[in-house]
Image 1 (cartoon, rainbow, N blue to C red):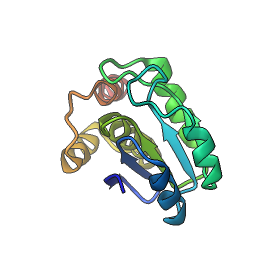
Image 2: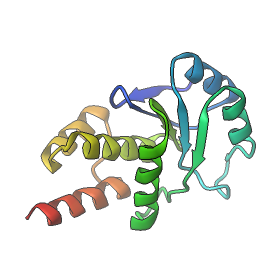
Image 3: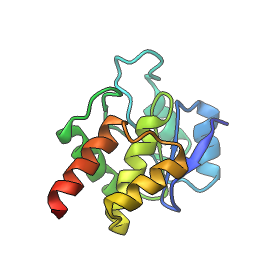
Length: 145
């Protein structure tokens, strides 16, 4: 199975998942899958929604750019996470976007400070330069000052 990073009991992140990964995720207790890849990305699985549903998982696809943050898409992803049954497996191509979004969702849920988010990012091996994480931390810093 694709390597899964557990962010918390509610959120885990991974790179691209296979049909087997989706079935194993459902067996492991996951209730939902959030795909952050765009249908135009190389390697996007067109019937992933069908595969997820067949495995008994809720499914959502909110495309996020791997190279630049888009405030609207980020908020849409977070809102989708809030409405999906948990635990959620969030995935993208290599796992960085998914780890960042899972960490942001966890930070919102737990009320983590920017410093706590940075610490957790380091523990997860996530670069602070990841665009969505960077935008989130900037917003947090602006809102708390």
